[in-house]
Image 1: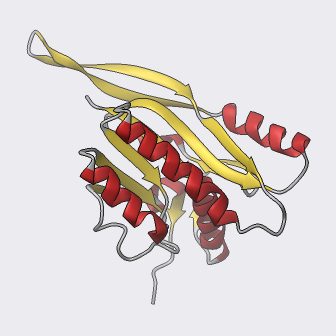
Image 2: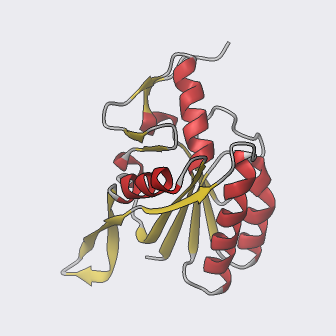
Image 3: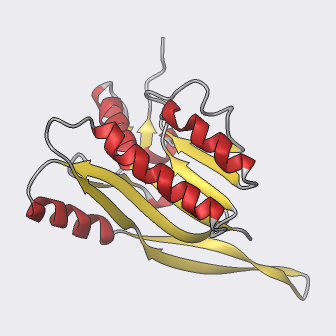
Length: 198
């Protein structure tokens, strides 16, 4: 099982989640949400096998140091669980181990006049490339539907790493799903129902 680093573009996911609620999508009760900056559902990790090294949640907030620290604490209070396959078979049976951890907050302070997207995109790109070039992980999983990351995905794959992208359908750049090794639609994980598009 290959080590996986998960990088969440919290600004993209939170903004699109809010947009989808605004057009009548019904969120799942088990979603974990903090303000307008954090949304998560543990089921995202439950259907596949992941040997997760780290989950980093990137977002930015305008406000004083106390507001930033409170956001960091709230994100860090969210734990995840996943299953990973144990190498080899025991008596012809496949063995699995469970692992858990907490989501690591990467909360940047920004002025109220800054563009939200640019603040976190750079940090996500740096963390992804560092994990790739230092060989920390074989799989990089990024939560974002932002087309600005397509060049990053190509660079990571050129470095011999597998790229998985998960995103909501709202605002999804049309080339994202075909530019990576695997694409995961987050709509069914975060919403009970999504109105059909006309």
